[in-house]
Image 1: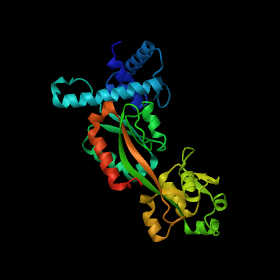
Image 2: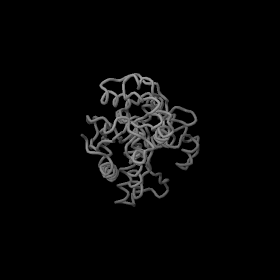
Image 3: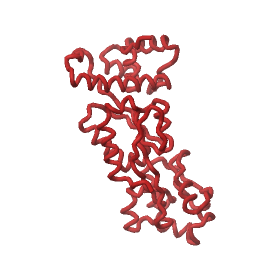
Image 4: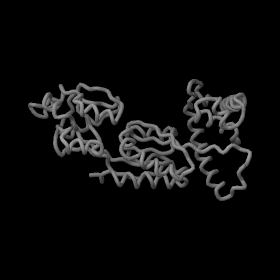
Amino acid sequence: MALDYISLRAVSAVVQTGSFEKAARLLNVTPSAISQRVKALEERLGTALIIRGAPCVATEKGAWLCRHMETVGMLESELFSHLPTLADPLSPSARVTLHIATNADSLATWFLTAASAFSRDAPHLLNIAVDDQDHTAEWLQQGRVLAAVTSLEAPISGCRRTPLGALRYRATASADFVERYFDGGMTPSAFAQAPALTFNQKDRLQSRWLRQALGEDPVCPTHWLPSTQSFVEASLSGMGWGMNPEILVAEHLASGRLVELIPDRPLDVPLFWQINRLAADQLTTLTRAVVDTARGVLHAPS
């Protein structure tokens, strides 16, 4: 079956822009033409590629096609840079959007620096998705992204893996909070009463640290707070205790605005950069920016 790249570009444009109307403007055609191309390709493949809504999003099969179009777009961009006369002067020059996944704490501490360094000279745009570091690998396995920062050490099938270093966390709270809840010491019974801060249902950092520090994992009452910066603010305000990236709380610890619950008991989370092999050679500058930035900030794995 020959690939219909005109229809594939229509699908990719709808997913990228979130609507048939914006996709039509991007490709300089009518919304009716976009609709017909998408419908024809769905009928040909016998499966839905786009979930119509506000915004329109890709189905699992549609996402695979969009990632293929990202790879094609990168290859075309490289080819046209060497052979510019091959490019159709009447065809709209849409920039390729690269889909990448990272964890929120990396995005808040170092990943944005790497992304900015890459985007300064690269012709591509970035769509950065956020998930727990233990789950970003699933985005790669499902074909939803081309690369990811993940805690998964095992190489993902079809990907290249590069160690980045460990993001160090400190269990921190305000001095007032420690006085209120841990006057009798850092005991399991005290932690069972002291409100913790939890990012979301996937966040297991508090449990991992408790098992490492205490040898057990008491069930803690928790505030749900899906924001890295809000974790720090909530800790400062005495709302709860949380696992905060050392990079973000170092000054607060030095000034005494925050205290470490158990001194010198950090939790190191090793991180890895995994990138689709088909895209890796075209994205060496992205990998270099990620690796160089990470290794200048993260700790060597213990």
